[in-house]
Length: 297
Image (cartoon, rainbow, N blue to C red):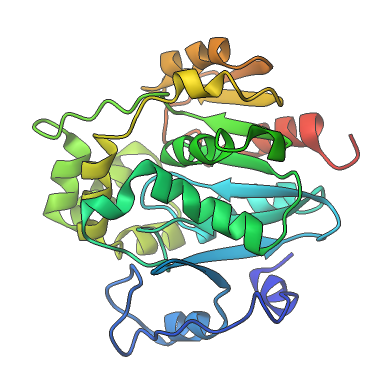
């Protein structure tokens, strides 16, 4: 399904216009705006979570099992598309991609207090509640995995299951030496350069990474240093959990060890892949997700 067709199929509620435009005082992440971006904003589906606008996109048949997607830090809904995930999932699921605060076209506060983990999780919960998604799956990768888990453990019975990739249950961020925070301080081009060293970044994704709001993302990273551990809370989540990582991922050991914290979990590992080049290897993990959770199961 094309992105344009997904927008045409949105309900009137989902298609309501945001109250801001890139031509005026904008709450959105992208620093500059061309005509394509302005057009996107006019049809951008979003929900309002207190003073934050949370952008989302939907794909697939609304009668299928809902699957909520949350990618890693600085990433967007378009990345799920460009890396091939949507084409592998939309036939089986009602897919809802979410850009939590600080990401893509959602509101980007620049104060770290706005990025407390419960607030990040509430962005996901607000989308789920507004769209009336019943018993959804939630899939998060890297930072998105922590946000997904934080949302799910608030009401474990409400979720069909979780897919969590490349993450640790307790963020260990030393801001005095943290390369991520330091790179955000150097601007979006520096952040893009880091990604370009890790794998062959698709052109569209590179353009988006070069436009991220690094002031907002630095505030998020600062807040992440104070996020609470999620290990104990995970034990209350009894629905199935699929954990995965690349063999060479820096979170490989932490992800594998997380199996012990869930009553019903299994771990998959992709040989030879690291944290970054696992992401474009989408056919492997989407196949596993469809096999375990697909609507025909």
